[in-house]
Amino acid sequence: MVRYRVRGGNALRGTAFIQGAKNAVLPMIGAALLAAKGRTVLRNVPIIEDVRRAIELAEAVGAYVELHESERTLVIDASRLSSPVLPAEIARRFRGSVLFTPALLHRLGEAVVEGVGGCNLGSRNLDFHYLGYKRLGAIVDEGETVIHVKASGLTGATLYLDTPSHTGTENLIMAASLANGTTVIENAALEPEVLDVIDMLTKMGARIRGGGTGFITVEGVDELHAVEHTVMPDRLDAGVFAMAAAITGGELSLVGTGLDLGVVRYKLEQMGVEFARQGAVLHVRCEGPLRPINIITDTYPGFATDLQSPMMTVAALADGTSYIHERIFDGRFALAGELNKMGAAVEVDGSRAIVRGRTPLTGTEVTAHDLRSGIALVLAGLAAEGETVIGSGYLIDRGHAHLAARMRALGADITREISTR
Image (cartoon, rainbow, N blue to C red):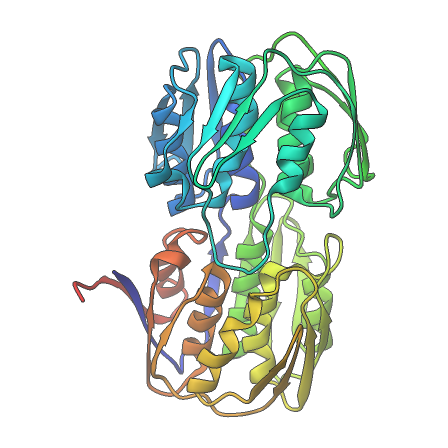
């Protein structure tokens, strides 16, 4: 069992190097399996547990993968895929396993999904992925524990996403890239990570138009080839470090090519956090008291649901009452009970939460319920009096690379440890 120990009271100062984007690299690994020849090279790869699981899955279906950790580089040779089975012991540990289905359909004619995992966030239905495959001509057999998707060849169609899911958009674009004819995807996701995946697929030879418009057209091609691509920086990782500066009264320089925090920057500015861009570096500092905030999560370009939990921690330290409306995942408020153990005053009513600050936080034993609540508890520990011990730290490792070491370099008192109990 992994757990984190955090001792509060230190203002974070220095330069934080932002990792590559988790939500871009996972579909890119799936996309690399579409290339029947050559080696794909991915750079700026975050060394996180979800990437390790994706590598295990790629190897399980027959790909040859080299991870060069010190260079943050991944080399993938998918020329000899041999198995259509995504084994449950790996697939159930992270939701990104569904992103391997398009490559298996095109390369082997079938995909057998034995389990789909990830964080427990309530209703996260994947039906629209499989309904999209059906519209493209696949046969989907859904059993109690296994989903079997078969296709002798996919044919372009018009697809509509009920919600603009970035994973669903990426999955269907990959499936359409090697399908016969034209596919139109309406209500497609707009996230920068989706555009980065489209950029990689375009380099591979895919014909994709309309990225970032919500209306994507894909002209199927006969083959895709291996390429070299650099993963964009992780907006969520950057947002967390900006919040760490805010709650500790610190000052950080965030380094990441083309780094753009989006709406979270404007919400933090409303709370009193100062931002300044100096060339490729984003400077963050907070000297005065934090002001309360209202947040409504939404799909991009709205406030990211993945940053709602960390923002709840920031709101608990603001002078006044903040209001949060969660519109994406109904399981996001599991954090509230853990923050209240530390002295916060968070009330949850359905999809809304009221955060009454400023309440002093005191370190205690808490549990991460998912990746984002875990990192939110790390932030709480940075601001709390005494020691905070965060259990189920593996969930944090799913999305943040070398977190303890990176934060210690900025002055935080934090350790990651392996417990036998």
